[in-house]
Length: 340
Image (cartoon, rainbow, N blue to C red):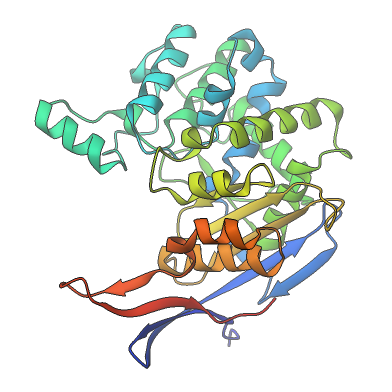
């Protein structure tokens, strides 16, 4: 029988604990040395959108990013799970046009934008939502542009057998320290997603922010991707109300971060006085609920003193969300209960 995973978060109503969220946390250095771990860090976890910054590496190493004069905001949107706001859809459309393509080339599927404001604007104007609004449209555009530069077929660019996807797998295997290709499934956007031990995700992010031991071409690409995410957080998530964006802003260059579906999360903390080699952090909430994810992530960064008190305060709505009833009365909270 599988052992119960540690409780990371409790949900209270008055003096009563009403719900609990269990999960796994792992924190490692680039060489795989474990700094801390709660739960089984060998838990097989689907990468989902957490590895978009890694999936973007072949976009850079192939020469596609330079060939199409990709800017910092454009590279950031390739790493994004974006809100589908105009700054995202117009950026993606312009990138596609530069490659001689349009929205029809994407294979991610149409999606109502995450941004409620944008969704209401589309409804009011009678405009349909399209594949550009898909939160993964930037990632797919990067894959397509890579295929264009390499003279590869476009219709099947999301196939696991396509050279672009094989290069992504090879790059990810190297960064994650895997000894074989990972299990593969199909993501919500139809691109491949991978099942790997949670610690492998943490290793990959530790190496992403400190790529000194990597192949020089991959290291240069990793640095460029990290810089773009830090400089353009609004392109990684949205202009407001997105945890990735708000964490990037509050951290002020200390880290990169990326959420994944089913409440997975990865962070790469850049080298600092406390962590000279940098660290990678990976989190998976057992129940797939995002309710416990924000509190867990901020609390990890608080306990490790990666974020100072002021930075934690900026993220208070994610760190300790309050529960209000329909009259706006504060009746409870979501709080962390773990210690690293």
